[in-house]
Length: 469
Image (tube, rainbow, N blue to C red; front, side, top):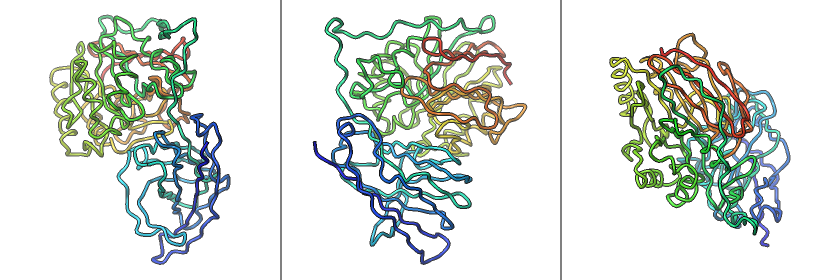
């Protein structure tokens, strides 16, 4: 086994002065364990010390990725300990000299990283797979939104290494997906058309938790969730991050395809940030095109379809790839669709990946604010998203995504099989479920809708009904 050493240097820089005073922590050298190098996925602790940003409110962290981590998905986790209004995490490009970061420039990265924020006493795990290369050094900027901030420990890297699929037992040479689990009966109004939805779905066979496609209790349960889809469900909406870790065509075919691919005639996908880990989300568009599923123009990734008396709008919330801002082509298209649906007397459901409101690890996503405001203004009824790996239902929210008497009702359904996230309910949150996988079933009727979340093996439930706006 080749030992890999990780070096972490912390520089604290006062942004209020032109000439900042630098305080550099002693480098921490750690040798990964055998389990780490063999794909055990355990975290590598770089420095179990507290880091106080003090009055400077900014720190730059420099770390190197072990050469042995080639081909891994890499997470960087930080934990806030002292009360603070928030800590923003952003990867940057910097030149280091004598422990000081200079010539600092932004690094175009994943939305989940560039907008990453840790609330007081919260944690955040950032997937840096597409911007980190084994054997190279990187810089991350931490900045407190206001006041002093303190981390309970310096960041540590966690490696989710590829591993060979678990071999089946000799008596069962061909592992099969678990038997379908019948959810509790849905509760649509008379004449309703049922659609189901979930995001954050499929692992690839190289994932350590693949287990012959069956997954484990906490990961890679895409087959168990797809088995919750009933023959009477008219459409299956996927809420992004359909295929981990990077949405490659081969992974779509072997991972998503082996579980959800059989639902092709009913699939209505939306792209997530992991799809764009492959340039232009090529694997996403190529895969769905190859099985006859419309996913919109690959330069846009948004499209509309009708299900029953409802208009369904699949949006692209990867706003650094396809603009979501006010006045953008996508926002103007959404407004036109909403106006046309209202004129035709149709209720509307919009779905995308990054939630405007969420109590999960990623939290609220302001990048989709203009899309949310268009829906609020023009009578949008239901909004679905994923990104956070949990289930959450919100009461109606206003234009600024705070509780309001009249506004769209939104759901986060990141429970498609990949993994679990913790949840700390924010204002407006009506129901949260985590620690299990499942999907949301909506009964869409003329002028009304019902909802029911069903978990694998019957774990967890949520149901209700409401009128369209």
